[in-house]
Image (cartoon, rainbow, N blue to C red; front, side, top):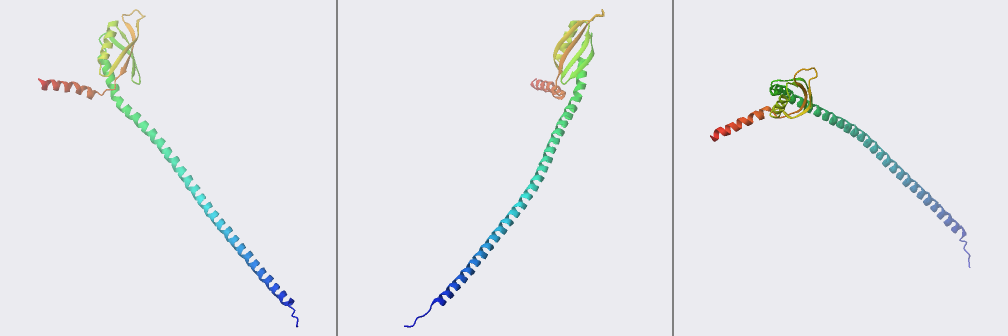
Length: 199
């Protein structure tokens, strides 16, 4: 019976399989390296894009902060201007009131009384003067109570003049009214018209 030696064929098959395995291993390594490189490139690109977005957001936020600061400054300036305008309007309204107050003071002074000093702080008036008697001071206080522009008279000091003169020095406080004279002048007219129509 003839004998066949299969050893060279087996060695060839083994070498062939080892070569194929080596090629497959190298292919797998190359594929894995390619996937890894592509993944790293994708992550790097995404990181760069996110970094650019973050920088853009920081720039926009800084611009918005500047605009907010400017708006707050404008609001504060607007508030200061509004308060100044209110003060100016109040002064404009009080300008004729001062004239009316001095006119009213001249009208309320009875005979035998004259003022030596007038001081106003806000709506508070300090009147210093000389009267021939205390009854004249009482008359002055009654006239102030009935006044259109003055109210709430308060007698602070009454002293007899030291230099032997007849009369007393007094200090009197009163409050300035804020009523407009047009309204006060119209009220009696309306009443008189109503009375006339009723008759």
